[in-house]
Length: 160
Image (cartoon, rainbow, N blue to C red; front, side, top):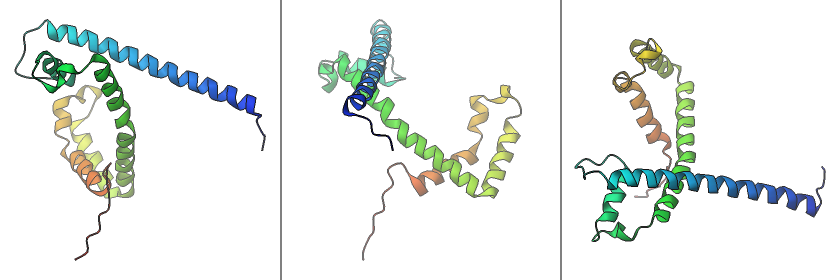
């Protein structure tokens, strides 16, 4: 085992901290840029009955002075955006890892899934939303994976 002196360790740590701060600053700047662009478009267009994204919903709420969001700053929204973006990565990765694990563990499920995919998707041009909606077996697999191993799965034991 090689021992790193305190100075060498601090230099390595300092570089990692600096790199992390630069990454966060880059994300914050990009999120702020997206927010400002979207908000400008939303503010200059007539209000629609159908809200299509969270930025649009919050922008309309901020415009309504009686709303709880009227005092919600752009910084608050950027902070929430980054937390939402980063917060979902672990659970999504874990969910899809478990789904692939269960498919691999059950060859009959794998075979049926491949058959259904091959019946609807023959070429890259067939990768369209309408064809993907017809892949109901993958939905069943996702639901079963969620039931067996949900991202917030907890075992509650009940005693009668």
